[in-house]
Image (cartoon, rainbow, N blue to C red; front, side, top):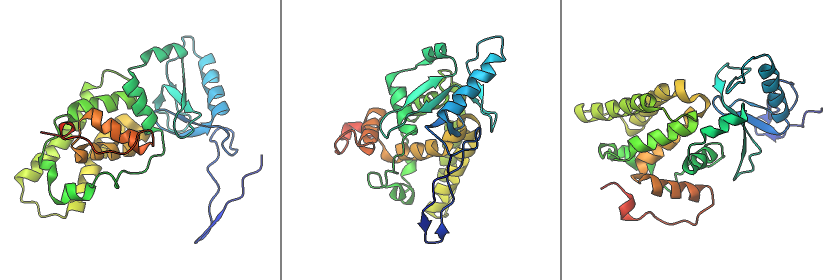
Length: 248
């Protein structure tokens, strides 16, 4: 199979896309494992799962990524910008379906959505120290997001850990006469939260941190933030959240 010719940029030809780690050919029908987010040909990773399953006496409910060995529960594929399909390692495992809201959030995480800087002013949040205004929905939001990305209901310990890191950071900002620049504080916050979340969220970590920051900055409740996400996906006309949607 011929490698597609690369286009030229200002600094010379762009490197060709990474090949499928299994067949070493250009990826055909791109598919991702749901935890580590490594990409493969859909046919290749499906065959890999069937091969590994054939070597096990008991039916599997998860598969270790051939590259990083992280446990994954499903293959995400056929993403067209608005929807995707999911093939579970064991189709009986699909009973782990949590809710339509969780499915929507997973759809959002695997989509290529631009950052919402045109809708939410992140810089002002840090410059004006608006992080002192506690978001009363953060615990519930964190629980839903972590459940979505781990496909597991029992995430209280993970949520407690991530939320604890965030609260410790904000309490320290209140105690200290911290004259650090807003961008420095933002970078420190994102670094600390990334380190806290990465062991559990793996390849979804950076996207999760983006969403966590945007949710905090927005001051919206979960329903209003979901409507904002629908706007970002182009599935809802633009409009501002009502006052009832924000922290009070």
